[in-house]
Picture 1: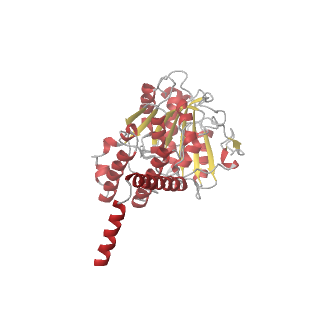
Picture 2 (picture 1 turned 90 degrees about the vertical axis):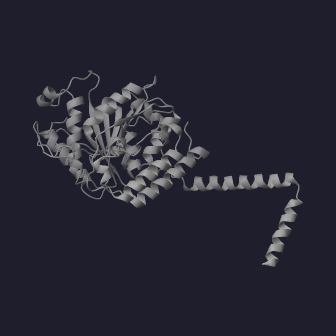
Picture 3 (picture 1 turned 60 degrees about the horizontal axis):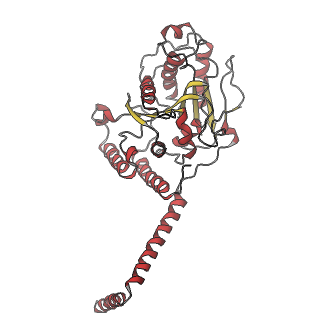
Length: 385
């Protein structure tokens, strides 16, 4: 012990005799070295989305006689957008639905979605019943599409989507299906041919990757992504549209975020396990600490029901990197970087059985993903032109 103390004393004396200038240079060199190592580490671990395969940029839909079409090339506003220009919309509302093995939950969600879409934005070819029940809308607010992005599904997700489309396309009075918000099945609505398009990702990307892929190929003036389980009340889409229009800037850019923050004290949340509620509050704290100021004020970043104006897409979609659960946060960060207005809107939401989220594992993964994401954007590993 005495020998060790003597060594320490000699080290202190040696350092004390070194000129202060040399010590400062050594300290700065050490800090610079640590920064370089940290930058290299983040550069190495920061996710880089894989390029889409040629077959993933095609879609299938139903022809007028109900047969599945051969794969056709997806339109892409991105290819025509060397700056922040974007091709004009050809319809009013695009819905992107990421789906991984959702054969059991998809039908109910689609039923509620097409009922709302056809009632609010349907065309004159949609049948007399729909026309009678439609609420008045401005004449420009017409036309819709659903892009179902099957994210490497190994079950019958695509088959279920085509069967649903066929039932609602070939019959003027199709039989409806029960959904999370409509437990009693009623009469469905007739839909025009080609309104439901199915995109198959050969290799699973993750929810964020599936959403981003779909948003690259939308035709709508507004674009919403919605979870395939139907947990968010689809009829609240009108609230998002209204909020989006209210906050649009002079360039026609806006984002409306569906929010469940108003449900924090509700029975649905209180009944959750203590672990899940603890992880939820911990994640919110991490978000508040690690995200830019305006993103940090969003009370619910993870609700799978978000609407974008078409003119906002070129400032967000081309720069997306996260393909996992944390992708919502990156979208909001990119909106903030581009000074795009964001509105948070309370929406209906309920728990739906069959979630693929592993609370503990995915919460840890989301915290790690957020840390890497924030560091990558702060250090310039990721850049937004």
